[in-house]
Image (tube, rainbow over the protein chains, first blue to last red):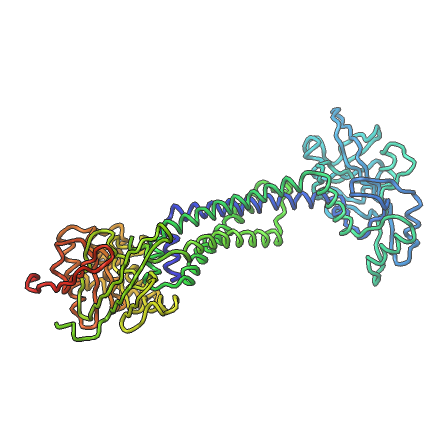
Length: 376
Length: 239
């Protein structure tokens, strides 16, 4: 009877297409919005992920990576003295203003790295060498700086600009994960970054550290917390802390959650209603099948097969369209679009529940159907 | 054939069937007694609302009775659990409806094969048997047509082929000629008459169409929920 069920489904092309469109739309909307939401969450942690270090030490009351709470310069040595720490280096992080030669001002996120080790440097440079940061007034900008600050004609290797009236020379173009606030990153050495920044009593933003081999990262962070009284977080913990802060303090979670919920509701409503109508309009046919000896269980199986066939087709097309959108609109990391397997699994479960709901209301109708309907 | 000497294929005794409750309760069948024999084509006639279709439905086991007893081919239908009754119906009965009730998305052959699919037959075997059956009702050249591309008479012949494909012993027909013109109605009844002549089969036809009365062996008249008469039909009238 599976064959009959599928022929019935595909035979009513208008309803089949409407069902397919409804489910495809729901899947596409949920995947697209879910991927953008997750992309934004990934962006919110780019201040951590771009530096790629295992332990972050800072003020214990910090909420998120961009909320810099300067700590004492002596902290670096205190962290280095904690047993199990292999190395610890200073990091400056702050938002300053860059003035280009054409007079334009731009907000930039200055990252000051330890000059000796350059720990926290970008993983990949499009142009130039990271070691050139040790040259006088040298800075490395990321690819988003070129985009935001006037294009490759304005920002390129050798470009001069000012940070807080002090000279900066571009010696490299780095590839980084875009920042949540969409502020371009400018890398330089720690000492030079402090010189660029307005004078403050404390200039150290973070201490970056790594545990020795054989010592667990959780153990080392615990020791740092106990011995320094500071906040010490693994990169994952700090990322999660930042993510939670973003969800709590921006409307992103609610906004995207609402859209995703709407996609689910609209998908359920369209699929449920259309599928129910499909069943109601075929009631005589189902009645005839029942009269001819088809059991209610077999009819229910036919309905479930129909629901899941159209559902899985819609799932495939919806994900395909959402991925296509992400690949086109988010090419080069311009759009926060991160499609993950847990999201696809979640959407699959959501779709199964839509199909199950649609099938259930139709099955209830069929279970109550008296085959005598065919004689009326 | 003297059918009255054999055990009836369908035995209806004191059957009462009502719809609704309280003030809205309507008794549609009022103590019906009826015997229908193998090798017989029984016409069930009477005014609209007289209970013909309800009687057909209770004989088929697709409506429960309130009181009484129905045996179909020796099986007490009302006493079977719903699942067994459905299976029994699928194995022993064929149905022909006024509105054909063909599945519009299925070809003629696929429609005819549906009862065989229900029995669990393989698709290729079911379709092969369906094509043979369509050939027997004169539609061998229309097997791959969708119902919408067939005339009313052809659709009803597909419905007959579907009803006969699993060789049912009881054929139940509800106004099979109501939607057909005279010549097509006659053709359909000729096929049913042929089926009814088999000593192993019984055909029950509900009809208003007086032009086809002569195809029956007997005629039971149902008025206001009661059988008011059962008359043998003069076979010479069919000549």
